[in-house]
Each structure stands twice: as structure tokens, then as C-alpha cells.
Image (tube, rainbow, N blue to C red; front, side):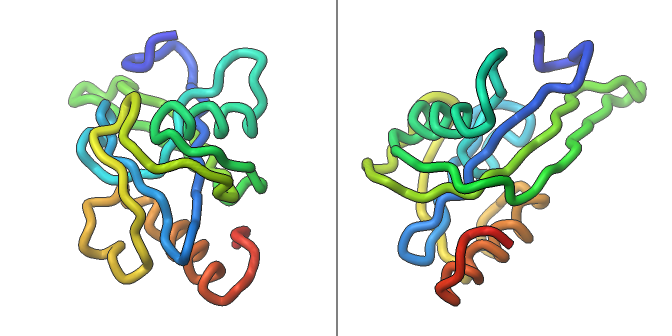
Length: 149
């Protein structure tokens, strides 16, 4: 299915990975939100579980190995063009994930990759819907709690 002007909503899966009180962010290489900081992730493939998609996308986008920990949030992202037609329609599912290993590098679909702490979130051009999710997870991480809000 095409991503721009799709015929049905597309399921996207992202991973919120925290290590040493910092969350992994990628700089998006594609629209929507090209150039903005986000979490690694991508489109769910036919026959793939959410956890499998998260593992695959994180490996492809930034070279890390993770263990998915469960759903943190869901979001309906619908962008319309100037005529009111649906240009993008994603159902986004953010999963918490435990870092297992690897060095973060920008791979497919990513212009850059970085670890960021809670104090840095306001200074980065982050996809706005992710800021509350990242704050909650980083706060929980700093408090020594699990990564689920």
C-alpha cells in the first residue's frame, strides 16, 4: 500500500528505548516530519507482530538490539492536504523497549541518531506528540521504575 494518499490507515510501530536515563532519538529521513527528531520505528508488515516489527525497525534504523516491553501509547496521525484529502493516515503504536546491545548509528530512513535526556527535550525539534511519552518514560527511568507509564 502506498504511504502518501493511502486507501486505508497504515499501522506504524515505534520503540522508546532508554539507557542511562536517556532516550534514543532518530532524525526522520522521510515525510511526514522529515528532519524532526522521533523514535525509531516503521510500518508493520503483513504477518508480523508489533514486537517483531519494533525489533526489526530498530535494527534497520539504528543498529541496536532491543527487547520490546509492551505498548506505551497509541496515536491517530492524520494529515490532510489543502483540499481536505487524506495525505497520510497512520495508527501509531509506541512500545517501550529494553536496550540489549549495539552502537547507535543512522541506518535506513534516519538522517541522524542520538541519545537525549529529559533536560534536552525542549531544545530539540521533536515530533510534538512524542514529547509527553518521552517525558513520562524518562521520569520513570530516573525514578527507577519500569518504562511503562
